Every structure is written in structure tokens, then in C-alpha cells.
Length: 192
Image (cartoon, rainbow, N blue to C red; front, side, top):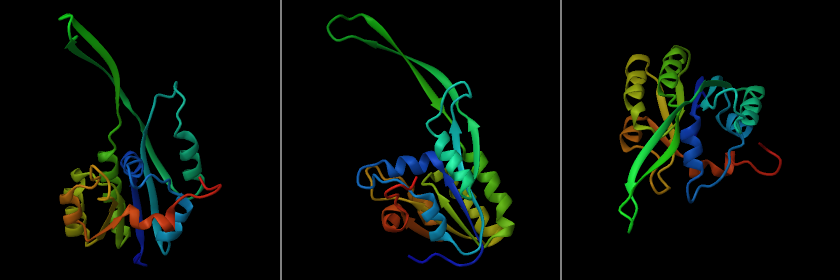
């Protein structure tokens, strides 16, 4: 796998990466120290973006965040928003309406990723975006046009459903499938 040696930045959409790694054929965890070594060279910044529950709730992400911050990543985080969702349905056979109440959370980090990408752009030649979200297509185009960056999208097309939008892959200068990186970044043994 060719990783360009010029000054680079890594931006990781945490929830998108987690979703991609949790699907079917991939189903592996990343050793983030190995990931930094893989992309080594002159690394300007490594940023990990995630949404967290309110401070009153314990987060299962906190150990990962602590680990990342201690091992060279800047973690950009915000509190997720909670929504109560009610859905009315009719029970089969009884014709009586029932209401199902569920709690949904939302923690979209697209704006934070976009702003930080634009901030690091003048300082790097390469940007590695770990996300398959098609909403970033226009960001990639702007980075290429305004800053002449070489943008590599890191996601996967080897899952069902595919985790990387076709428009994002087509706009990027290069695409690396997470499945092809497995040997160099998979967490094994005692790695986090």
C-alpha cells in the first residue's frame, strides 16, 4: 500500500469508521498506534471526531478517547442531542392503536470535520479522510481546487450495504479500502 511521504493530515469520522468496521466481512478493530505508523512520515495532525453522551451519562468511548489523546491524536468531540420519537401503529388482530416511544440520538460531526479540514489545508500536501459520507464530496472538491491537496478517502465498499458513497470515491484522488489495510492496522493482542 502506497502512503505518500509528504506532510499529511488524518481526519477520522469516528462514528462512520466504527460503522464500517462493524459490518459483515470487516469486523475488526483498529490499533490507532499502528495506523499512525502506517501513515507516518511528516504528519501534521491526526484528528478523531466523535459525539458523546451528556456528561451525566457514562460513555463507553471515554477509554478510547483517553488512549487517542495520549497517543498523538487530537480528539474533537461534542455532546450528542437526544430526541424522543413516538410512532403509532395498529396491533394485528386487536385494531387498537399503540404508541411506541423510543429515544434517538444524533451527533453529526460534518461541520467540525469540514472546518478543521479547511484549517489544516494550508499546512499539508495530503489529506486522509476516514469517512464514506457522500456529504464530504464538495469539501474534497474545495480542498483540491483551493489548496491543490491530494485527498485520499479511506472507507470500504466490501460490506453490505457499501459504506462509501460513490460520489465521494469519484471525487477523491485516491481510495483505500479498509479491508485492504487490515494487516497493517488491525488491533491484536493487548493493543487498544
